[in-house]
Image (cartoon, rainbow, N blue to C red; front, side, top):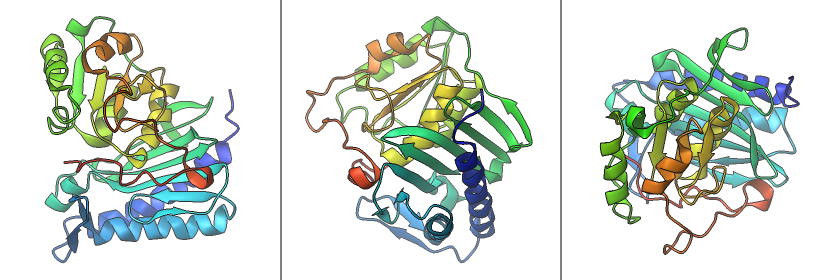
Length: 289
């Protein structure tokens, strides 16, 4: 079925192409400038340059759309909002680790309808649009479909996460460790890569305890269009919570039994909408390693 958002998906690829060029030019540069933000997370001059370039293109190509980015907050109003993480995995980027990506998403009425994840140092890209399926490859013309795995037993599952930090803070460290012990295999692939591999069927479960909407939006639609489920740890679908659980769908309820928690936990109120009707959620998290 053709997606009604094909034009937006093509634009997301254009934005990713520009981001790849800028980010790769500065990757492992000896004069890379690095600062620490108020939330104690690192930011480089490449993060700023990529987000600025994406915003510049969107200001010409989608003049009526809002934009929400990790580094520069929210601009514009309306039911359509582009959500940008210029470099997801900045800690990797500044250390020369090639696992980082630019995340571009389009939300309409607080539902993600387009997502593109571009990891040029890995020579990988993943994308999806509503009713258009999930894909991976080097371009729209050179791609293969993504499908989640058919694993249906936790004991056979591969579980990927970012780090242990944060699970104790939300009161779910014991559940996280119990889930890890029950799974066949655990690896800390981290950041966007965990969720991309869920969409590909290489990993069956991915979870993180503390995130912002720009960390999740593009990944949400990719996992869903690949046949999986993407929710917060409270079970609510989508990327507007403060954490994430993504699975192949078959394992979601079982994984939720270990790491899920509910909105009565202090500070875990549902997120407000994104874009013109939404508040900026970029600061609603602890530092991501």
